[in-house]
Amino acid sequence: MPETTNNSPSPGCRDSGVDANFSPEGAGANRDALRRRIIGLGEESIHKSYYPQLQQRLRELHRFKTLLDGSNEGIFLIRLPDSRLSDPDIPDVDMVDVNESACVQLGYTCQEILELSFFDLFPSKDHRRLESFLSTLEQSEHGRSIITEFIRSNGESFSVEVTLRLVRFDLKPYAVVVARDISERLRMEEELQRVGNLEALGVLAGGIAHDFNNFLTAIMNQISLAKLHLDQADHALERLTYAENACVQAKGLTQQLLTFAKGGEPVRRITSLAGLIGDALRLVLAGTNVKPMLTIPDDLWIVDIDPGQIAQVLNNLLINAVQAMPEGGMVRVTVRNTMSHADEGVAASTPEDHLSQGDHLCVTIQDSGPGISEEVLPRIFDPYFTTKLQGSGLGLATSYSIIRKHGGTLSVCSNPGRGAAFTFCLPAIRDEQVAANKQPLEPQRKVNTFHRILFMDDDDMIRESMGEILEGNGYTVTLVRDGREALEALHRARENNQAFDVAIMDLTIPGGMGGVEAVGRLKAVDPLLKAVVSSGYSTAPAMARYRDYGFDAVVAKPYTVSELQSVLVRVLSEDGEEG
Image (cartoon, rainbow, N blue to C red):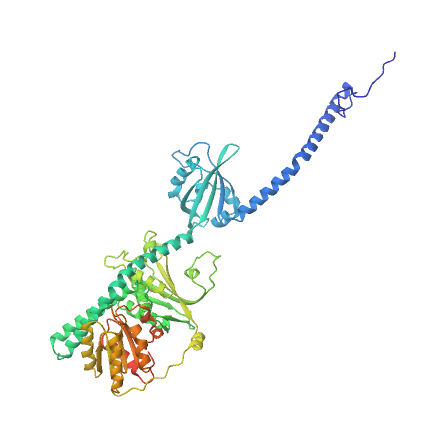
């Protein structure tokens, strides 16, 4: 029987799609075709099975990368050595990936960063500490954080909080590093600490100020009375003058302490800084071998300040500059009008960047001395901190407190060997604002030939001595202890048709009615009465904003007879204008 060929597949077998009738001669070609066919089937199978998953993973990776690059923190993935980092030399730690914020923080391109060792980003003094942290990551379940510094591509450094956490890929150790720029946070913490120190000192200063200034006032009054009974040729007159000058110097020290007093405010008036700066330069640089260079705009804005306190700041900063240049040199004083937009999204790089929004006047005093070391710079405004053998440590701290109470800022910038520059900025007023807000003068009482004064103070020594001094200067004086006695005296005087021209009133009367409460009652009885507030606590709100409390003038204890006389002449003048 002839052979028959059955081309149908055997039961249980599937057609592979490959021709079974191939000859040995064509085996090579058929083998290649078979391989290509099988590979093609595999690629098609893989494509159908895994391509959607690959696409999904790629989309997830893209979202993850976008999320990382959108973070404000710098994020790094670093590869750790398999063994612990215990070699004598710090090993290289490669960076596998970084986000965009890390590149911006450090000033590199991402490719440049990846070519560096992780330790290249830190100062050498922190390398051992970082090595220790990396070597113990496995022992920390939630990672570890340290505060250190990053070094930018230009060599500048800035503070960062670095958090490291161990991860594994293919069983190999890596670390995810998150770096947060904390320069501004540290600056604010230092600022709060400094403010806390100043307020602690203020509690002490405010507590002693009133009594201390009362004592000085009594002493100065007694000296003035003693001098009235001496001839000009008397040798004792010179000694009393020395004693009076010593009291004035003690007053200056008290004023420095009072600038720290909690709640104290400057006694403000609108003025130009040009005159104050010129006076300070003449006063401080006289007799020194330091030369000034003053840069000031012609259209200088004006400021609402306490002239005495700001003059004290200028003197302190100029004295500091002169002392930094014992061999002589140049002090540069630069004044500029500044408009601040308070852009919180921009990192602060100049003193003006820390200002609140609005117009400001900024003054920079720069010396050509040796500069301030990095160790000293953070403490430069601390009370009682000084690097000078005979320094009190109050000059810069006092200046800092004064500027802060004026709503301004005081900062320092220094590079060792290149001098130091102190900059203070104050809220400024343009001339057109002053013209628009100027208040009309109130009607004033015409000056009489004889003046009657009501003097109120709870201190017996001050009250009696001042009564004698005022009477010696031609005034008729009635002395009272507190507001209640002042009201009684006012009613009696009006009944006798002998109204008082001026009431000089102590601000605080322990256990009695003080000046703030009494002035309203007195003026309710006699609206034309002029009232002068006086206190040993010269930074009290009623002293700073005396008109808001109903007073017409202010005189701070301790005061000289000539200072009080000047105030009386001013309030009793026909037009009532203050100088």
